[in-house]
Image (cartoon, rainbow over all chains, first blue to last red; front, side, top):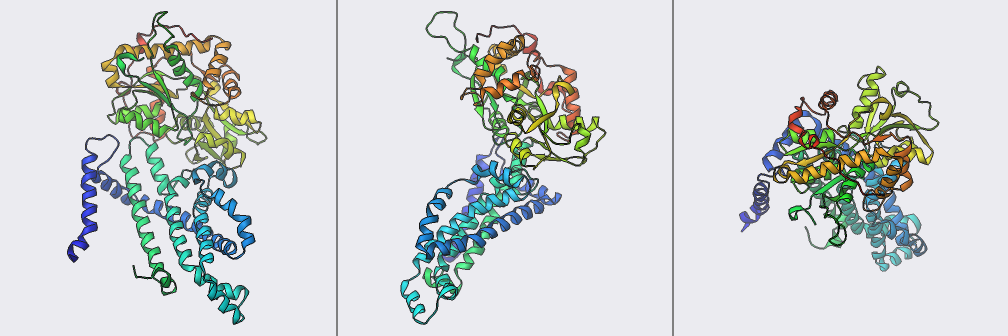
Length: 251
Length: 326
């Protein structure tokens, strides 16, 4: 059982690649896995792959970092003060479902065509999930802990730091994981805004450039692999002792 | 109704996503539109039944349009000339059978900007739709004419619909695009035309009518009809200012370009040869010089022979048809 279990994911990937190879047979647009592997080798040899990856990670780090810096405090305030919640919740819910693609014209108007526009779009995409999950996390903090803390005279920022934030942390971390996933998801759309590097740019530019669909799919593969690694890292956060109490079992 | 029951799509990208949508889109499209309209089946069985030459489909951007052509889902499209050349050279069975329009590209700068010649743009940021757009070649031509070399201006690729905002926001100092995205900022009052292909390169070629070879083989008559209508519509457009206004009205409809009538009219009239349609013939020497410029701009590694991507036969057999638009 155990060896089969271990082999399971690899078998599925192998099967997937087999089906892909078959499906791509004779297609003028859909490259087969071999062509995509060759395209990856080409990108590595040229040294452009590392540049595209670095640019995308840089933009995602800044956009997502800004979302953390603003989203967690805003979500905490909304979770703790019913008045702030009532005031802000409608606008948050209203803005949350709008795709970053729709913001592109405004992003260009406000931030030009450098790095700032994609960073803004990535920020937008991860900010709202963070606000919502932080708010929910604060709502979920059990009142008995809060009351107990207050009985010991813990109030204000101290109360937030020692009771509310730790109590909301499991939700916040889930929000961080979702937010980072979405931030990485929108990198292709965000990099439609004129720039000359990034994995999204690689895909868009390769579509423009003749028939380099091998590079398009190579870009997709790299985005998938990096997204997968980022998710593994975020999952690690969920195993920290500070938050494991909420999740119950180990993962 | 369609010939042999298979409608063909004549498509043209309207760039939202960008890529190059050198927009002449409209008027140019007008050419194809008109073809479609001319072929609309008339009510009842009166009048000689006109075949429906083509069904008009608008695409959101160049890559989508290109991919539909590669896959064979589309049988005919108005493609960017370099795009059609490139596809043919890569073994995609397509041939260019006529032009879509001539001229129709502009370089725009801020209304109160200090730029009065291309030389003033040295060291500045100039937006182009794509490195693979003919507008890029236009910019390179202007650079060469001003004694500039690669790198003397910073070229930034921006989807044409986003260019007016980028200029307004100061993100770029100038932009080069097909109409109507130049006229848009001009009409809005914050930009002016620095150069028009009309003056600098009047026989400028941008979009070309490209047809899948299997259609050419299976139904030459249909392709001939399409070419006849597109080229006749072009002559009709340049015959009279009233025709241009009528075309602008049709093109502005939601199913076609979905752009303001006033905007298309602006492009059609200011001046009347801002975009031209009267001569949509394929001229060997023009394509050779375009190819030379494209190789120079690193669009292609090598020269692609004229015969690989061109089929002159339909243009040679051109017969004028009536364009029944009032």
